Amino acid sequence: MATGGRPIMGSLPQALRCLAAVFFVAGCGRPQTVITGTVTLDGKPLAEASLDMFPVSGVGRVSVAKTDATGRYETTASPVRLSVVVLATKMDGKTRDPEGGGMIDVRTSIVPKWYTSHATTPLTAEPVENQTTTIDFSLTSAAK
Image (spheres, one colour):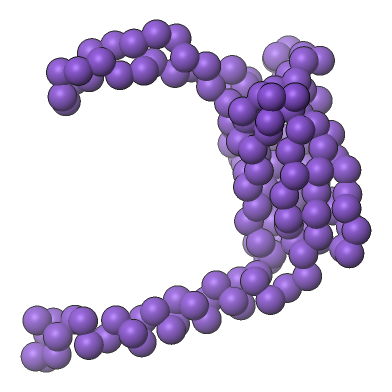
């Protein structure tokens, strides 16, 4: 029971309608475009990397893409200036799980840390509305 004697479940449909409205206003009804390209690290394709693209202005759709074995990606996005973060890890072995006692994978980032945060990434994208925009990202391990 919620305060006031009303069951919490009674307000669930109203909450879901409000949440759906927020998603629609936040970007689902706005123009979208396609971004495609290749991600490399030190000149080599970056496979199985995740690209997170956030509108710099805060208005538009957040987009996510995953690279394939050749470093290629494709996603849909709002045609606005986007801040781009790239995340990729490699397995460095196994270690004992401190909570369960079993073994768990140890993963290490293979992308330099400045590419992994919107506060420090130099990567941006500016897709063009109503057309496919090709944007390649050439990452380097050299310190910035």
